[in-house]
Image 1 (spheres, helix red, strand yellow):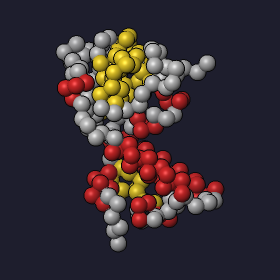
Image 2 (image 1 turned 60 degrees about the horizontal axis):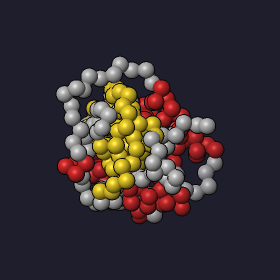
Image 3 (image 1 turned 180 degrees about the horizontal axis):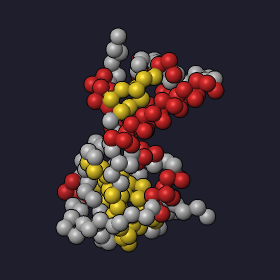
Length: 209
């Protein structure tokens, strides 16, 4: 049976460092897993800093707004993932296994404490999740039938983005839709370009002519 992970990504709720810490996540336990202790990959990101806490967590049975509170039932270590930009690929089962098995020196974080969820909780955090869901739906609808050559062009563009981000140690480049998906643009190599993340944030969903 494949190892099943709980994955929590944090930019705003503190880094877990020991047994007994509590944190929260948007996703709740699956049905029949409410009481299960699961191996957990907890990634904390701040600009170019990227740490991975490896531990086991259980749902406390508590909710905080729309989120679920988890308790660190066992703690393994925290490792430094500086320069590793693959965290946006959490859906990859292979990546999760690689990160769980990765051999890295454990960081000494004895002076670091994790704030309680109630002290750092932000309401309305799920606007981003709703946006990502809409974007995924648009990608499905607005991707035409692509030839093999067109698929390869898209793949090379994303690979180039990943290489540049890996070299910079943070997410500095995005693949952008020239005509935004929100404006009816297609997910096609002729409508894709590589630009900096800052440029993409300024552009947003505007149609730049």
